[in-house]
Amino acid sequence: MKKLSDRQKTLIKWLCVLVLVGLIIYVFRDMAGPITKQLLKTSPKIIAMVILASVLYSVIESAITYVIMGETENNMTFMDANIMTYFVSFYRVSTLGSGTIVASTLFLKQCGVKSSEGLGLYSLDYAIHKLTICIMAVVLFLANRSYMMKVFGSYSSYVVLGVVATVLITTAIVLFACWPAFHRFLIWLLGKVNLLFKGKFDRQLGSLSEQCVVMESATKLVLKKPAIIIKVMLLDICKFSCWFAIPYIVCRGECDINIVTSIGITAMSVMLAAVIPMPGGIGSSELVMTAIYSGIMGTAEAGAMALLYRFATFMFPFIIGVFAAVFFKKFKKYKAVQNDENRHIDDMEGNTVR
Image (tube, rainbow, N blue to C red; front, top):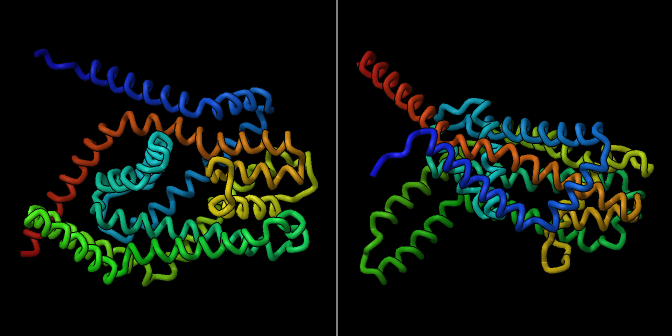
């Protein structure tokens, strides 16, 4: 059978991606149509500002990844971290969120980060991410309590529930990443299952045990450095401010709130999205934001704002991520050569020392 040329392989790859994008557009057709119509109705200046907010978010997200992964031995550059941000965004949308961790671990592996280290550090990053949203929401709520009580008065019980849920989720993630007792329990439990298969998975259990130790070491290393955690949280605040300022950017002429209050309302809405029951159990941030902002600026304006927010946080990163996914194979080859060169240099340095 005749082998396919590189050009044919590239063409097939693009066709597969386009088919996948088409399927995603079809699945989200109820959302894609209104977003497109809203973009056509919105002034180019506002669209440019919304896109800029999205890009700044991604740049800061990349900086956070670069800072955290800098605690391990790897050859990740800041540009690699930017590519990873959009690569993960592509798989977050195409797998409806289920492939985010797998995509991030796979990408980090190409940069010389061990899978277990990548999983642990990415989980820790997510825990700080969740906690920062909670801190922003609570601090800005208290800073403008009288106004916030008017907006969230009917949701007061959910505010408390949202804070409690965020703290519990954050604690669970941190314990998963670095608690030896939990890992021993997991290995013990899987060992019992393995006995049912007469030791068929002994090798895999041994490998998992080793990876848990590596993951614990990597996450504990970061947790022992408060300066890094503070730096990441400050970057997270800057990152979220970009997204959370979008309602103000879009509707600043439609209501009398300032940008800080708008960021606080959006932060609280995002936190509450996980605990406020929505129709069909969707729990979408945009649906909560629409409900909250409707009382401030009107239903039509709130709906338009939510569509543009969805575009900036969901569709735009996905579109850029398509290119990161298509050229991922080339990226793998490039990093493989780089990893080989680094190993060769390390070997030469080792021989020189001896």
